[in-house]
Image 1 (cartoon, rainbow over the protein chains, first blue to last red):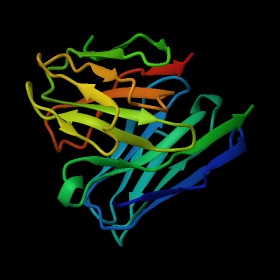
Image 2 (cartoon, helix red, strand yellow):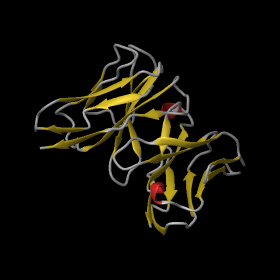
Image 3 (cartoon, each protein chain N blue to C red):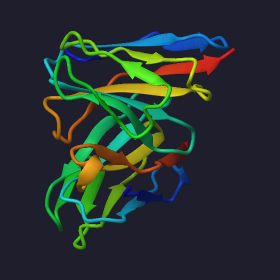
Amino acid sequence: GQQLNQSPQSMFIQEGEDVSMNCTSSSIFNTWLWYKQDPGEGPVLLIALYKAGELTSNGRLTAQFGITRKDSFLNISASIPSDVGIYFCAGPGAGGTSYGKLTFGQGTILTVHP
Amino acid sequence: DGGITQSPKYLFRKEGQNVTLSCEQNLNHDAMYWYRQDPGQGLRLIYYSQIVNDFQKGDIAEGYSVSREKKESFPLTVTSAQKNPTAFYLCASSIRFRERKLFFGSGTQLSVL
């Protein structure tokens, strides 16, 4: 089946720093989604991307749909302690038994030191 | 407020025991999903249901069973056949199947005694 690889696996940063993470796929996607999971909670959708090259912001968060359609990027500016959590990328299955189902990356764990 | 409610938050299973995790939504969504989350791994799909009275196996269905008798309810049973059940279980829903935006519950942590 298709795979999503997120990097880095974890990040330890100081409050106020900017954060960048990315996600790559083994196949072409027509949609990219970014979710955030707070400790002990379910993921919450941050940003959805629908077109190659698209750049979308949500407050201090900015995500981009890669031109190759096999990657996506998430940036967080001026990090704050409540940014702590796991960030997941996700994309829809390309076909066959994966059609219609979301595939999730393994997540990037973000720790912010005050 | 509309949302997805999972219960219980913490659950313990004894050897050879079946346990059932509850998931209820009042969003009027057609599709519902169960995911399993292990540390350091992404979310893996166990079962999904496109509409009431229908459900399909996901990528890791062995040792699990579901039912969808009501639109708002999608309980997951972890059977004794699941040899490694300790994980965080997440229920989700979407307006319809193939809708990319999933709404998640707050999860159930299942541990083996």
